Amino acid sequence: MKVDSFVDFYEDLKLKVDEELKNNISNSTAAVENTDCTSKKSLLEAVKSYSNILNSHARTGIVHYIRFGEILLKLKLLYWRRCEDCKNEESLEYISCKRCSQISDSKDFFDDVYKVYPYKSSYINFIIRIYRLGHQYHKFKYIPLSVSVIIHHIGNLEKKMANDKDFWCLNVR
Ligand SMILES: [Zn+2]
Image 1 (cartoon, rainbow, N blue to C red):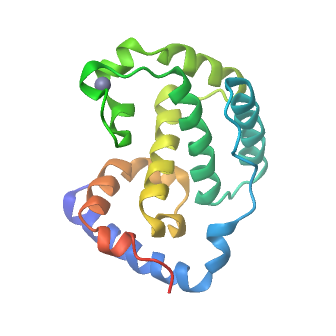
Image 2: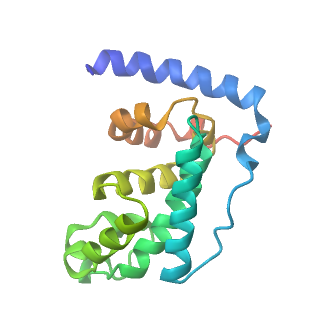
């Protein structure tokens, strides 16, 4: 997509998000599986039940992917080790660090997930990015786009949203 057409797409998206926010306040509290588990075993079980939820609904809201991404992230962190540079990093940026990745059991993480949710590592990381956007920006939950559309724009969206925090972080009034 050319820069100009992404800008149009993005501006249109913001209008739709506000519209969605007005009409669909309950969206953010959609009932989903319990995400309080903390062991590899229980988190992998949660991944498995999510894969069933996501497969059984043709149109599954972004909220489900945000919760799913949270589970995947919690699980990934159990396989993750921090490199020297990231030892004191407070933000979650270290989850994208290549040096951390090299000393972590990333392959085991993706292999274990694959057994219950057979998707490529890039897609698993994409769902984690969805969670991070939803966690960081309140209004992201109201994006009326399917995951298959978001995946094409995720990089541009992350950049735009970071520069447009006032819009995305605004709470429901
Ligand atoms: Zn690192």
